[in-house]
Length: 322
Image (tube, rainbow, N blue to C red; front, side):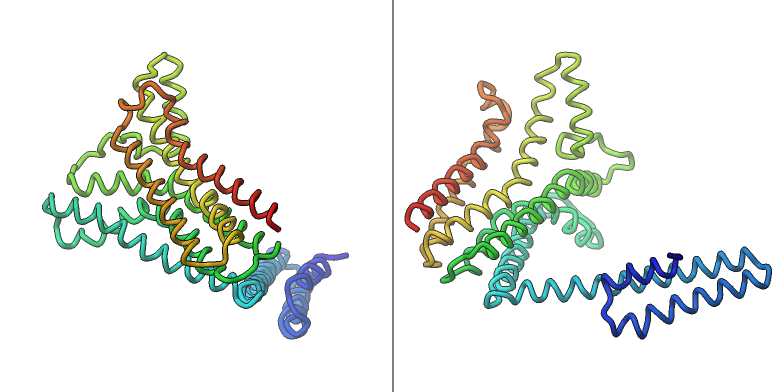
């Protein structure tokens, strides 16, 4: 089997018969013809260039076909089961977008009202505070979207696994933002507000996860546990915020399976959310000193653990009543 045959066999996995007949087969035939013509003319470098150009065109075509197939599969997935997942994603996206705007506006207004900021820098500063709001907005917006999107419907295994997949993707997005995007935008925000010509020293919240791990290991080697506490606090706080969309999403899914009354499930979620926020505010306001007698990681992860236990209790209760 030559290269053209292998490429054609690969293309048949992604492209329709019509695309194969109209695009792929003529492309492979032209690549073979031009390559063989250059070889017969004694121009090996020209033959290699033409073959490389043919490969590039082929992979561009495969990418287009794969994207179109993925888009079609996503559309069918969202429209299945009476548009349940499409409605769930739509509500979740709308709620998350509104929460991101509101949560980003609070620190933006607080900083700009207390500091003189040039008008041309206002838009840039607002973009810098947006990543701070995204993980929290996902943690609250995703479960609310799940509760509203699944209202009045029984959840079969296909819907449940689809929701779990959405929760996993949301958690990965939050993890990437908390671990790498947020430190950079925090640092850029600080330097823009301070107008420092030199780079400011990075605090715990301005370090990425690998940088935090490196500094923690260095401090632990020399026995400076007190200096490591702020780093541990930031590390676990961001990890807990990254895991919250998954835990809260599963909690909302379990809650939707217990009751189909949207108002009741939303009210339960709001009460649970207020409790979660109260715990988070107590931890943040208490800072490192208030919880010196307890392991920082245990304190920070406690709200997520409580929600995980409530999710298990709801699932057990639903299975017993079924």
